[in-house]
Each structure stands twice: as structure tokens, then as C-alpha cells.
Length: 355
Image (cartoon, rainbow, N blue to C red; front, top):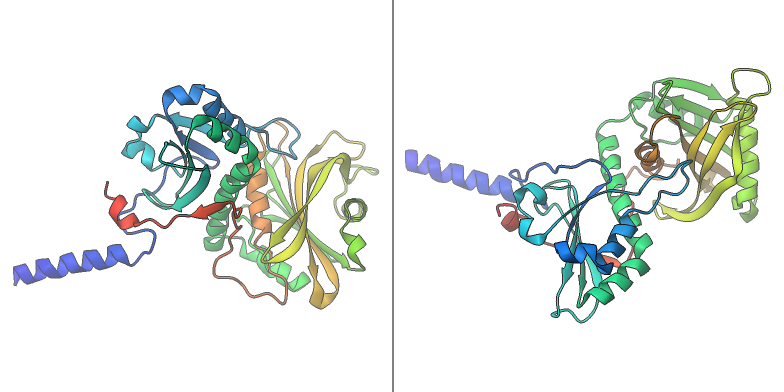
């Protein structure tokens, strides 16, 4: 009976290893901090123009913050040292220079050596083309790696989010959204909801409000700023009379983005409190709820005067993508899609995870 039991055990292990798709039960958990990137590149090339181009891309400042903060924390290693310790990094860029290639392109693979993990490979026939391509596609690279981290945050929110906020948002707006659990202070107003961690430092905040949709001019930056300021003046006053939150109109910009396959206006910039010294960054998504003829705005803002704000803001920004309007279905997976210039490479992770 023992040999039979042993064969059965082997079959069971093989089955479990194959039923996880990209990840089997033996895949280790990835290492590294959010927005930390490991660059696998020849040591000499790292110091030459091609390597400096990639470093400059990753070292760019995050837009919409009150002080300079680099987009990513950067580490690097030579390919000959790319061993098991480095292979479990959560985000990896591989610079692959070879005369075997006829053109420069990017591709990515998920959960190759660990999970969650993404490996972005830049293939090029020579260093000159690598440098030019990297600089030309700098925003594509930054956006891709940022979206990877935000998708990880969304997956974490799916597993654990503040149910009280979700219930309140449903009762007020008929919508759903996943917000970080640590937002525990709340305020309700007319077509308005505010949740906060209520901390003296590193205070994370979520705001949601709505107003009638009239025409396409509703989605201009000036219209948005005026509407935002009127809502905040009523609902987020300062400590004394004459103090209230307002938009720093000199430091604000808008982008057109895609959320759940539909248009949304993204607005990023700085806020301050009139007649006070408080201020910080914010990010908003404005979307049309066509069934109810209204614009729904969700916003994250941070007050953290003595700390860096990049990770706080990106945490709140990721949560905004989870907004579900009344007529939308709750998706099994919410993904912020990468740029079309980067194609996913399917890899047999069962084979490589043991290496």
C-alpha cells in the first residue's frame, strides 16, 4: 500500500501545482517595497548613456506633488548576479541587448519567479537604439510600472476594504467603491461624503460628491475647479470662520483616462486651506452616470506635511478605479490596462519557478 500512497501523493502535488494558472503553490512571495524596481543590466552599460537613459526615466518626479519625489526606488544588478535572491523582486526590468534582434521593443511577463511579480524586458540590437527608444517611451514605462503597483493595491482592496464606506456610498449615491480600511472618520452632507484617517500626520482622505450633468462643457478644467471649490467650501471648513479647502488653481492639470471602459476626467494638483497654512496633493476622477444624468466625482487627498506623499497618493488613486456606478456590474477583477506598446509574454511559470 505504501508505494500506491506515494504515487497518489505525487499526483496530488502535480495537480495542485498546475491548477493555479500563472502561479503554483510553490511560487514564493515576491520581495521589495511598493514602487521599488530592480534593473538587470550589464554593470558597464548601466554607467553608459543607455543605462543612464533608463535610470533617468525611473528617476523622474511624480507629477502633482508639492515637492520633488522620484517615481520609483531604483536598484540594479548585473545579469551574472541575477540569482534567486534578486529573481523574487516584485518589479524587474531586464535590459536585453543582442545583435540577434532587428528592432527595439518591450514585453512583460507576470509571476515568473515569484508572485505578485512583473518582469518588463526591453530588447534592442544595440545600446544606441536602446537609449533612444527608452527616452522616447519614458512615460509608457513609468505608467506601466505605476499601473502594475496600483493593480496590486486594487487586489488588496478587493480582499480587505472598508465595508462601512461601501454601505454609505451605496445608500447616498447608489454606487460602490473600495476604500482602505484605515479610513475610520466620516462626514455626510447633501450629495456628499467624506472619510478620513483623521491623523495629525499622514492623513488620508476620500471625498465623493455629485452634481447634474449638463453638456460636454461640464468636463472642462475651469468648470471642475469651480464646482470642486463650491463643494469643499460648504463641506470641509477650517478651524475658524473664513477657512475652507480650495483648489490651488496654479498647480492643477487634467487628463482623459479610461475607467471600466468608459471616459473619465482625471484631475491632479494641490489643495490648500484659505487663510491657513494647511495644504497637500489631491487626485480626482469625474465620471458620467448616464442613467441618473449626473457627474460623480471621487477624490483622494493627503495631508502629510513632514512625510513623502507618493505612496499615500498612489494608494488613494488606485482606490478611485474601484468605483462602480449604479448600472455597472461589479467586475471579478478590476485592472488598469497597460499601454498597447507593451505586449504580454506568456511563460510556462511551472517550469521556470523551480530554477
